[in-house]
Length: 383
Ligand SMILES: *[C@@H]1O[C@H](CO)[C@@H](O)[C@H](O)[C@H]1NC(C)=O
Ligand SMILES: *[C@@H]1O[C@H](CO)[C@@H](O)[C@H](O)[C@H]1NC(C)=O
Ligand SMILES: *[C@@H]1O[C@H](CO)[C@@H](O)[C@H](O)[C@H]1NC(C)=O
View 1 (cartoon, helix red, strand yellow):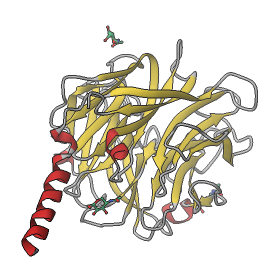
View 2 (tube, protein in one colour):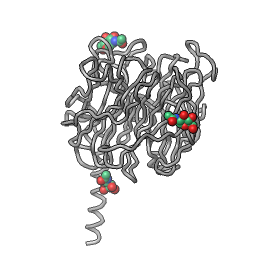
View 3 (cartoon, protein in one colour):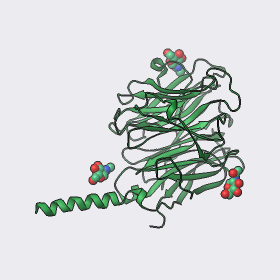
View 4 (cartoon, helix red, strand yellow):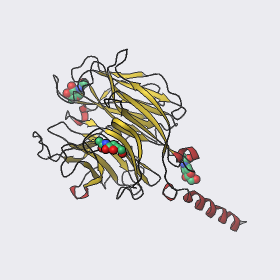
């Protein structure tokens, strides 16, 4: 009996680890696509940009974007738009505006969404007056939902504790550390103002109640005007690997060293980003844009408009060795104009959860900022 039970357990482990993604042939295909937001139409919004996507702990999908009221410009007044899906992206709620910055000349800048797996809270961090355009100072703001994205708190001003440095989170998702060091810590990374640029991370060890600055990788020359080819780490997406390190895929804004992505790494839970760990990933050609990164079952995924010079050809790549190299096959999600992107997936045990990743991205026919599209990607389309 004991022996049988023992063998039963061994068998279950073998079967389970046998389904690890990297032992199956990844052969991704677009399973379905839906436009979530289209700008330029009627109503209160000129342009939707900067899409974010996350699952909640209860398995709902939340899609966020900046709803720019009067123009496609980065500055200007905005709402934060939200759509919610409780059936993994098949149907979506109508848009609700969960934050309204009124008529600010230099309104809100999205943003990072981070889900606390212990409390279930969905935390959204954004900036006000990031560009210092007809306003001062810059503020780092937070709203949160404790009911699966249904209702949202009033905005809280994190600059009271963080200071008023310009900080544009993400855009993308923040992480909660799952592996040592610093299990449970919330890590939200973003970038500084144009002169004071660089990658900066803010950290919370108490589920978002208090925040402090952690790791930084400053631009050179720091606090000075940048020229083409200067070292200017900018918009970024952190991902935690199973060894507890945090890999941050970074926009190389002034094309220092290459027209490709920078990859920074923190080995101490987001406290530091040692320059010794910084690499330039020449395979990940990039025109300087915010890109998507995701780790799922030992595979690293990456999305960007895969071109050194323009925002076209939104492409999904995958790596079976955590980014040391990338599989030659790629999935072209959209050949036309395309911009920022963000990815998410479920971590559950159901077949469905292993099979799909979900991508949101800026998509257009003539300009990349015409609409925001949601794509469900079947990773194992031939199985
Ligand atoms: C946020 O707090 C900072 C520091 O106290 C303050 O200077 C800034 O005006 C506040 N921002 C908002 C939007 O209230
Ligand atoms: C986009 O992809 C197509 C087909 O793969 C390629 O011919 C084209 O050069 C790419 N465009 C850019 C700007 O890289
Ligand atoms: C998935 O299965 C593993 C092993 O049976 C278990 O430890 C884990 O809690 C499960 N995860 C979820 C999200 O159900």
